[in-house]
Image 1 (cartoon, rainbow over the protein chains, first blue to last red):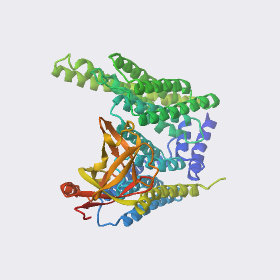
Image 2 (image 1 turned 45 degrees about the vertical axis):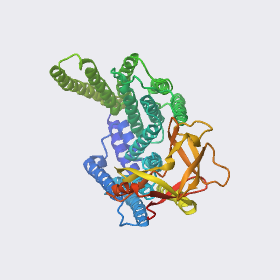
Image 3 (image 1 turned 45 degrees about the horizontal axis):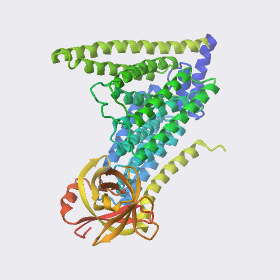
Image 4 (image 1 turned 180 degrees about the horizontal axis):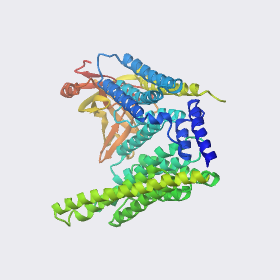
Length: 403
Length: 170
């Protein structure tokens, strides 16, 4: 045990050196710390400074975007372009220098690198403004995401990865919204996109690329899956008239392409789960569940939904999903999964209360009941969530002890 | 080949700047090489987004009647080619086709946004005109005074806005 303690102490010290010498990225260092239950790095203790720096970078980025968005006529077009190019290059360069070539201002360096990614997006929209490129062009968000993605991987930046994924998710919804008014089409596309993101999260398990990337892909994927299934759980005729049939050919082609890419990612995850010793213990049931959700997405799009049985089926599906997500979170020791599963469960309980009792109870009693349900349910769920999270941490440290 | 970390970082930064230049270049080529035409338009709904104030331009050629696309029906999302012909000061839609016209006719490449009854609604990528903050309503007021857009159209049918013209004046 004492040897183990010395090993952990030495590992923590070495890890800090590896991180500074860029032998491992920040995300990889965090994954190793979690694996061996090591205390957070000295940098992590400066979390408040990090958060303030990131907030500052975000506000500065928004300020610059809004400043240029005002289309100030006094500044000639070429001067605006040079200014924004210089701002992007300066922010990235200064961020790189502070983050990787000094030891004192690494948090500020990270924030400036993130600001560079925001300014890159601002530059795209500024250029589009100057050239009068259509305002409803989701391709601009796509361009922003594609430009930042390689940097997110090179620097191991989860903040940049989240920015990329949000851009892609918004661009997708924007694009779909241009071609269809059918809610079934809209939610089917987001359901399949959620499955794709979760599939990508499985590809990051046990790989040389940062395992910590599993979390942004996984959490956003789960939120999209839960969010797309949730509207179909209502029983007030929401889904009546929702039709997935008759989508324009342009949208059908894009959807089929999305289905194909998602199926390929799931098959790759399946092949890797068989080959890797380090694959997630829950990989196979996760892939099976994703395949079922993929089929549901396809049915929603090509067949549509009708009949009262739909809400019953989706209630069951969401219930099984929320329990499954909590279970997977417990087994893979990821607190974010437990949080998303708990949120999905709580949302469903509150929605069903409104569904079932709105017409049955006097209004005063209804609101008293709703308040009581929220208060007591909130306490019960929070206690259950804490219990599961405590077990997740306990299991984690026990398994490391035994190893 | 083991490329140093710093080099990889600056290569990606270079790639981002190249993407921005490509975005500028794609429209500048059209503006420099395209044929100048005047398109009749009505500005509607000044909007305020994060990107600034802009007016939505609704061209006469944004709405095409059935007589110009007899050969087949179209669906939203489909790419079409609209052949233009001069009509007085302005250029108007003459015919719609699924493929680019082979002769030397001037045409615009567009995307069908709505196809209902006997009318097609088409977008050409020149429907937003960005204006300095708070000046969108001035353009809307000029709608009855012969508002038009001078656009450049290249040989591939791509269009770019050169300027907005009110009563023949920029």
